[in-house]
Image 1: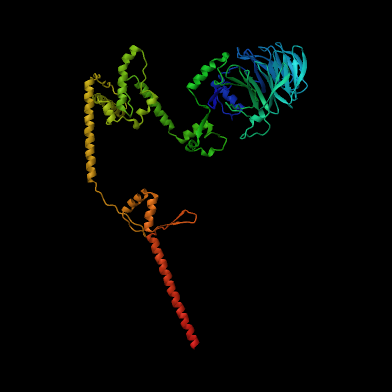
Image 2: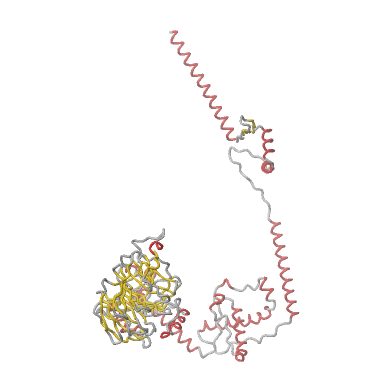
Length: 637
């Protein structure tokens, strides 16, 4: 049984046996069925629930006893009895079935709408009558109060055939160009039809007038929806008197869950008042699914509820016996990384499937001493089996040995009372939830901690005896490992536990532990005080950046005091220092001008620029003086 889950809805495939890889050919599948007993003995819910080639339509009778399916090739209909879980009869037809309807409670009255515009009536014994409708039909519904058949199809008209009178009545003229599906409400018998334009037209059979139109195409298209064409109505079903489900060809609607079979689905049939779902596919086999969320299993297969509950309690992953799943790292360890991309490996998720025989050969070549390890393991198992009748030592875990020994002693003491009360008490050593406590060193009990010493004041007396017993067991285990054989004598049992002290003794022990804790804390404080005295405070030196002037640490305190003052006080102080100039404007408001203090580096830079300009002036003056002297000399000559 295959199990799939989408949106936390589990779907059980009842038509599938054991899981087989999809890439296998039919020849290999048949070979596996011959040699594998589990595949041959897989459970089939309904025997021979299939068609020669393709199944097109599935219906269930109103009494729930019969399941009828139509298929090709050749066109035929098969009836299955759920009480016998097998096929009841088979009938061949002249043309393929578009859809059919079971008029009676059982299979005695059936109407088939065929692809050649034929309408064929069958009774219990077989073919009864055959007629034709003017246009190709796509769906029809039966109106029980008036015995009328309503046919919709490639026409704007709805054809009516009265089975009591045996003749066609006046058709219903609609606004649609074509109609795809139709249905009649089982409560008030309202007739509804889904059109190719994406509308649902509702008609009252009593007055033969249209009473309402529902535009599903307009409401199904939203701003974030992506559609390729007009969402015409492809499915229609009433649920009670006021509810109706509408399906469109573009797939608008909220998804509850989904299933993806290997082949395309032609029809879906829900078994009434249950969670069983049957599908007609483009394949010989018709699938059966069970969805517990939709409802319980039918009465004729009520064992499915127990079966699914057992599967939920012990979930198992899908395993292929003839193939081994390996990761890329496993292939590198086996030296088979060069096979990636070849037909010997089949990519699947984060790894590959490979033949189990190839895997064993590669593993044997990669580790030639595997057989020796296997042989030693088998010898060790045989020795352990022979030791079972001898005296066995108590195997203690590596972590919390004293706690494990305490639990073993308590379990032995409770064996006598367990026989009297007949109660199975759980053991912490055998419980997987507390397994880590005896394996992980982080869970080691710290007996020197304050909490342990206060909450367990009397443990010291019992722990001494347990430590002696633990030491004896460790010595025996070491002796067994050295000699590789079981000692003949029995390990000495622990002495019988003494009775616990009374309340007064317990209080005194707690007080004693508290005093010890205070003394230890006092000693620790004295040691810390001595360490503090020994440490010397060394001066710390700070380097001032180039171009900055050292200022006292009082400047920061002055700045903090200045920031605490109000804005008016700060402005008055800055006016006194000359860094602020306040003046009135023509508009009537105040204007403030601030002067920023220059740093030492800026001052040095300004002085250097000033000195440079002065030097250039002197150079220009001397150059002009030399030129004037040369001119005078030339004139004199």
